[in-house]
Figure (tube, rainbow, N blue to C red):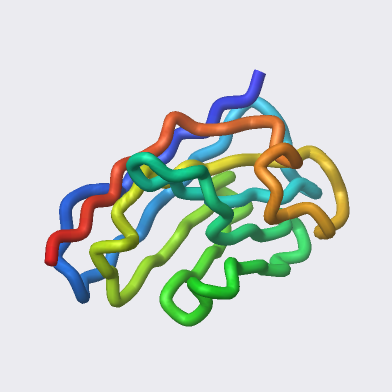
Length: 126
């Protein structure tokens, strides 16, 4: 069984920053990818960013490049998502996901990930 626990969400004013964390336990993800997705109210879940666990390669949604940074601490089995210059449209539930599959072709697809966290709410006020 795999557990992913997100934290770090909250209410923040536009222009502020947040760092989301995702702690993984239960399996060794030495060669797995970790991703962040978000779902705004009434909208579909969308890819935000991903990182390969061992190689440190990162991938971002084109529209979010520059403000979002994904990183990982392998020793802590934790993945982070730094969000700067927050905008009201960033308001969403942010989910962490883990994929046991190798490669990077499908990192933007939700169905490529087998394990999901419960989500953390990010609300940005204008």
